Image (cartoon, rainbow, N blue to C red; front, side):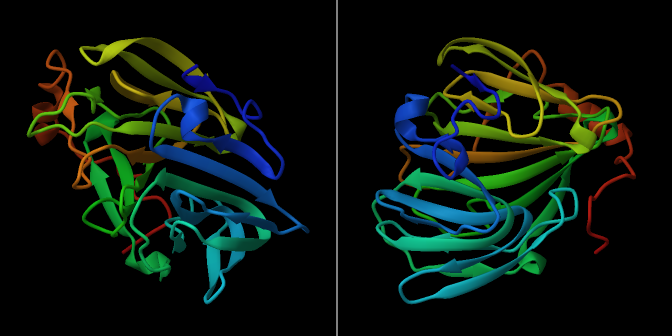
Length: 279
């Protein structure tokens, strides 16, 4: 059960609800709520969590804090501001729009925090038809959490990202063991494709046609490419967590395709990047 189409995991106020138990692993989770008139109230329990507007805005109310998130019109309009909510915290989120809640089981209770959109680091990776944008809003170097890591990746139509294929499933100095969630949005109600295949970490064989709201789980194995079909820009939210004492997104390329990175030196960056930010 690695490919979960939109609605497959809907539960109460959540249009997407991925728990560690549903995924069959230990740490990573994700919820998505389509807010309108009714607020959503819940307790984070064992999970530390982010509140990330995908489209729209919201207000996050905690026992001792309130954060007003300006949000954005869509995931293709640049990074959003976001809030961090610690474990064992009751939270109410109200507003209008589609709001993501990346999460991870954690043990440390860190303080609630707000981060403005202007503070989110935007990175361009790859080159040529492998050019893509990464919004490093909750990468290990950008934002402090106990276990949770999350980034946004935006791929112009016709390009490939998560490429060359890589994995996070074997403990060694250059690779972190991680559970990873891909949550997709596709421009103009289009389609994209996601590949996950076997490694020494386990047997897996997924080639999924994805559209907005779909999820692909990566418990192990090489993942990539993520393919933006011609005519349709592709967005995905990556949520990662694992057993390591230090948060790390270290990966190992599939050795058959690792040479591709050196080819980027002779190729220009796709001029359509970045999405939604000019500085």
